Amino acid sequence: MLQRCNNSIREDYKNYGGRGITVCEEWLDVANFVAWAEKTYPNTKGVSLDRIDNDKGYSPDNCRWATQKEQANNKTNNVLIKFNGQTKTLAQWAEELEINYRSLYNRLYIGWPVQKAFTTPIRRKSP
Image 1 (cartoon, rainbow, N blue to C red):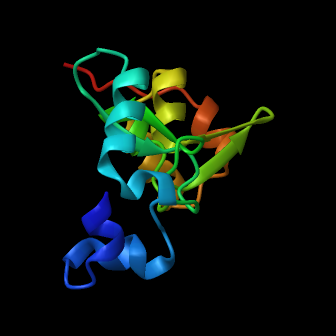
Image 2 (image 1 turned 180 degrees about the horizontal axis):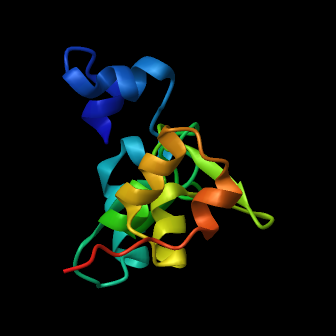
């Protein structure tokens, strides 16, 4: 967290400090971050620190513990798709609709409208 935001020679700095992502003053004292982490850590395997709003910095009100899947759906480069009044990532739609992600992606890539891509059943190949 500190290196990403403050060390300009790191390769990933451009995605953090280089675009204005900072660490709150309170957490610059690592003991304060550790105290927050100990208080909020869900004691669950497979979680790591995640910023809720990727355009804001690291602070107690903008950070949480999230699984890799939750973090993948919270990336700045995700494309959000609105369907039936809800907005989600393509991966979230694929899971909810129980349609293979690659099938949905390919349908949208070749220009299918969202409604058609999301509601047309997948044809199964004959054995």
